[in-house]
Length: 199
Ligand SMILES: Nc1ncnc2c1ncn2[C@@H]1O[C@H](COP(=O)(O)OP(=O)(O)OP(=O)(O)O)[C@@H](O)[C@H]1O
Ligand SMILES: Nc1nc2c(ncn2[C@@H]2O[C@H](COP(=O)(O)O)[C@@H](O)[C@H]2O)c(=O)[nH]1
Image (cartoon, rainbow, N blue to C red):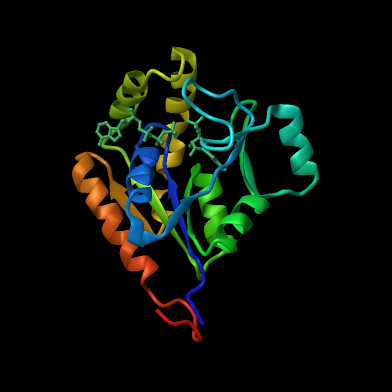
């Protein structure tokens, strides 16, 4: 029997560098990773494409999908900004035999870990400081000052969840963090997780 596809969850406060690390890992072919495209109620940023970066649903449609029980997990991450993992998305990627990698908030990350304890690794990306987070978000130039403040205000509470994750990667030196992420994910993917599974 071939190994069951796995789940690799990256969570952190906004601006810590999850997306940067996930994009790096997706380029490494032998990891056999596919990105879980989340649903989001917010509008697309410049350069973001519906069905590639997110499924952009808008709030009414997002709420319809909650009522239809279409999500494995969802969260109102910021006021009136909903994000969630669709069951259909994970099923689609597993049907392709892919290991699924997630870039989601800390609450969603821990929910996935609880739902799939045997086949999920949860990784917390820790920024050097909250000041550095704020600087990174400013430099990224994707959010207004007001939205940056909202994200930074939540960061301390999110940082406090770090010990609940399987692994913490400090993202200070980016190249070092990329290498650590690669090593951790490769080890996990090649680890045997069930009694009747081959490696
Ligand atoms: N180690 C690092 N040093 C300096 N800048 C970094 C580092 N890692 C990432 N960045 C930059 O910080 C910004 C935020 O990174 P990224 O978008 O990956 O964060 P994120 O955790 O995915 O945020 P969000 O949750 O808002 O999507 C980006 O502009 C990225 O290029
Ligand atoms: N619980 C979930 N959180 C998610 C999901 N997809 C993304 N996110 C997180 O939302 C914030 C903001 O994202 P942004 O793209 O607006 O910067 C960030 O922490 C994401 O990781 C999801 O499916 N579920």
